[in-house]
Length: 389
Image (tube, rainbow, N blue to C red; front, side, top):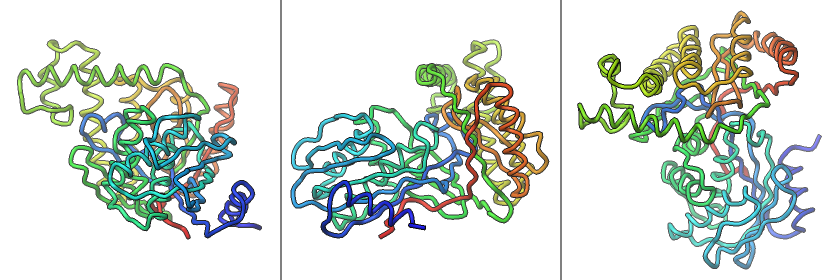
């Protein structure tokens, strides 16, 4: 059977023709084990790179033209030049690549033109960060052909900048950081204020991480995301009046929340309570995983889901059912919604021998209730993006 790398290079030659050496780059997807809607509140997150990935085949050109194509995104070829000002363009997904090129030029990296073929095993729009993988992989292609390297955190920040300015998505720093800096066999505890990281062991002998795509994404997700950010800002403004040292919900304590009862409107208080308690859960869960206290880590994941359901109000019936059914299987330590909300995926932490039973139960119960077949991905902790050859 032909390897994925050989198949990718053969497909590249069919699209772009024979020529000089073709280089291959990989960038993983990611799942967030715990720590939802904490990143833009200067808090803590615990993401993990997954085995599903995006592969890039690239070859240098003698001119400044960049030609990009992908069978998963759009079968056409998108073109732009690194020899002049890089504008936003079509198709929309190409702006992730254009933004990266523009950011690298802004950093003084001498880019050459290139032909680029992108192939993905990540579900586009499934909440597993295909966008960050696209950005980081494109950046590594340009850097590799230019004979340059970049430190991990500056590279993550550059890709975030590209997403803000060209894809026009005001994302946090979590996705780019884990795609760039993940370690095999470990999740990451990321401090979104200090941009410091710590490894959280995920032993494949003990654990499987199961991602279940509900195949549902409600249209109100993006609008409600903006509403939640405004509600968090309103809560910060309230607490700042009493303590000017508070800069974000990360600085608010449980005691502060108790003291606000009856003075801060209930809805804003509940939004703040989710973020404050989620930060505490995330740090505790990372510590439990490091100590192999899987039952406690799983309980914190379930608490996280209930907080998202009741206080932050970003789950939906389909997601709630998947979590409830997953937790009925012996050997499943914890499950929760992962991602922005209103659909998308859940993530579950399971003993390896419980994975099959959980998958069967979820497919049966979910299809019976909603008439949909969920997509199930079983993974362990993968390494960050790298040059394959």
